[in-house]
Amino acid sequence: MSDRPSVSVVIPVYNETDNLPELLDRTVAACRALGRPWELVLVDDGSRDGSADWLVQAADRHPGEVKAVLLYRNAGQHNAILCGFASAQGDILVTLDADLQNPPEEIGKLVAKVDEGFDVVGSVRQDRQDALFRKVFSGIINLMVRRSTGVILHDYGCMLRAYRRRVVDAMLGCRERHTFIPVLANLFAKKVTEVPVAHAERARGTSKYSVLKLVNLQFDLLTCMTAAPLRVVTYVGVCISALSVGFGALLLVLRLVYGPEWAAAGVFTLFAVLFFFVGAQFVALGLIGEYVGRIHADVRERPRYLIDRVVGETLGERRAAPASHRAAHHAGA
Ligand code: UDP
Ligand code: MG
Image 1 (cartoon, rainbow, N blue to C red):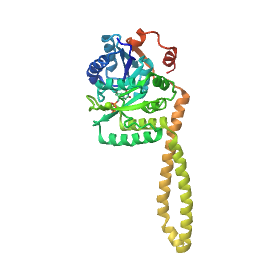
Image 2: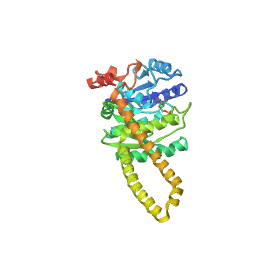
Image 3: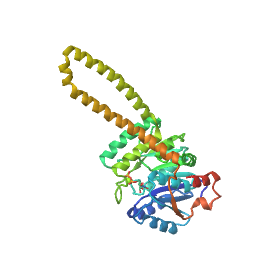
Image 4: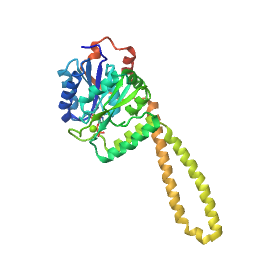
């Protein structure tokens, strides 16, 4: 064993039984190749397909290396990762997906970048193997995040990422219930970079994100990042009001010029304009609702997740006792 910083690899797993054998083999091999202490923390996010049992067996087969954290119910990908962070003990934390879209062989590349002194290392999927609508959607989101946070990364959706312990501890200290980890990390990282990584099609099974779940996740990303859309709503409201005053004046003038007949004929135009603004108001209200809903969730302070059980001991438990503030996260998370 070397005295280089230790690495924890955290993987959220939700109904991925078919992918697990290959995932474990490849990830363990990639971790061994690092030449430093490592652990693999697999978080079962309330799967119903036997993934949890498989993870328990994996932890039994790899004592001191693999830990299985089983959540009682589905808490969502980002909460599952936060749970993994809370029970991981490494100095460098790497996340990736369980469906083998992120090749575990890339872990070494990310860790090397952290060694160079970066706090957060993102990755950019080369030749991304996903549906076109997801790629277009991601392009818009990435542009938005870059504009809003000023952190110039090109692929916020790729979860193959590495974080320094300090950043992870700061994220664990955040109390929000709906969050988007790559964006949250931007708040605490001083030196951020990204590396190109390969991307594969999902090995087996189907995406765990329905269109609705995907849209919800984008709202998590947006609200975790900025309150600017609320300001935009205000500006739009002011502009609409100003325009409508001008519009009213124009209608009055036209009525005076062309007489009452003309005004009656304009009723439908007015309705069209009205419907447009009514629609815009609903959109604005919905947007405000997204924020209010999240404030509501945060005020209630319900636990982000419920741990059913933890199987396996890894490097943290065998090393000196973890710092007390880490233990506090276990209790408070
Ligand atoms: N995942 C999870 N909880 C969920 C949804 C997904 O832990 O509620 C995990 C899933 O098992 C995978 C990762 O998050 O490891 C990414 O999910 P998926 O590949 O379905 O997303 P996509 O690649 O379609 O964005
Ligand atoms: Mg995937």
